[in-house]
Length: 542
Ligand code: VG1
Ligand code: CO
Image 1 (tube, rainbow, N blue to C red):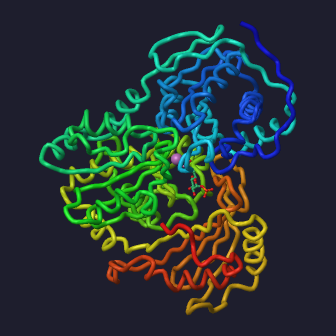
Image 2: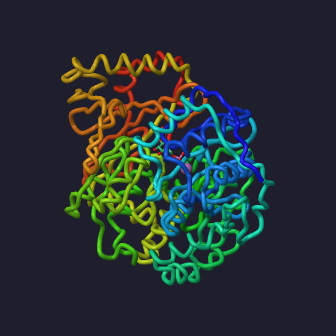
Image 3: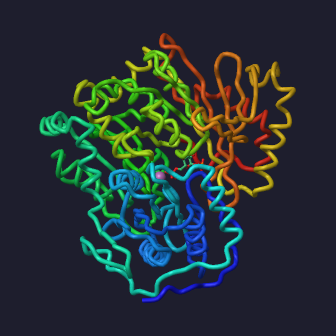
């Protein structure tokens, strides 16, 4: 058993995006690509000597091979111990929990999350820090700098480890513990929610459908919903993780979770429907005939969290990403607690959670979570909904109506234009920003611009600033449009247009969001010159 030193040269483009490094799988599979990035991580954290890491992924194509490389590199870099999920599987929130529970120094999560998987699709790697959360910008900047200067990586020449066998083994001097990916996580969920009340609800005939989208949550959902909580067998569909997610797109939104949506919006729908994404950190919530937008779900969960044992004493504060609707701000105001607006990406919630200033966080992209881990957590959101339903004994639709009557409704939609030529997308953004100085007072599509800016965030905990986090246009009367470029795509540029408009609680609460948003959609199109994209319309509307 020897450490091999391999000379290497930098690969361009190893800059981590919104959530780790994502590339086409074949790019990741090039000799040295994964290794360069992994070594850059070890270098950025000032070495691995004597450290403990958690390693796992969402089971997509190249997951197993990448894990073997990372283990051999961790050993050669001097790590003392690695905890690996059996068969290389760990959901992102479960990995975050394990880092915290076992006091690890960090974790390697192999996933491109909601992006499709397969040799011709996407792969990704992200590093989480000792608090269990995604590497903050200060650390991702170091990783990038290391990747641009790298000249060597090291790995052990030991044989591959059999990841299917639970228990302890060794790779050279490094201890490798292969653990059940589900059990610690299931116990954590049990400590937060009233499993007895949920069990009784299922025993009383409550029906649920959970679409695991052939991604990592299958084993977690089957164990928790069917085995522990007694939901009928078959509650979980697409529950076996596959390397290509059954050729699906593991993004839990009404467009990609078609099968679930058809059932939930059809006749004889179950009482509750939900789905999660590739790595298990996102959630989709839908009642019979009632889709719940992620921004609304965040607000409802925050307003009702006290009904679950883990939050019975109330919540300290709520944080949402900037493009997320203001619905959760209204809840924070009513509760008299702090609310924060952060840039897109879970890494920006970490400091607020660590400082105890917020308990619940969420993003419009279907991510919600709390201070129980440092990632968004799909099954957590589903379980909190179930706990609320079990206590309130009302339908999802009734809970939404009640919420909107109290707080008003923030109609919301996101329009995505995917795989655009980069110069065209950047052109739209820079022209729009250049127009901002003259925009206030401008009338467009029946609306008047109140103000416009490029969002910058000042972290109240560590004082750091993150600029250029999206262009915001506020209209008189409360509507808002936001434009930003995605940081998770792997082909060209994806432009996201986020639209919202507020309707007070005594107004018309039952409009189709696309109808309710028509004026702000038209205004955003004109102001940003979206016809320059050369598209008939967005690729995905959520
Ligand atoms: C998207 C979402 C963002 C989310 C990120 C990672 O980023 O908009 O809210 O945090 O994906 O989610 P972007 O830069 O493409 O807009 V996951 O579940 O793919 O790790
Ligand atoms: Co995800």
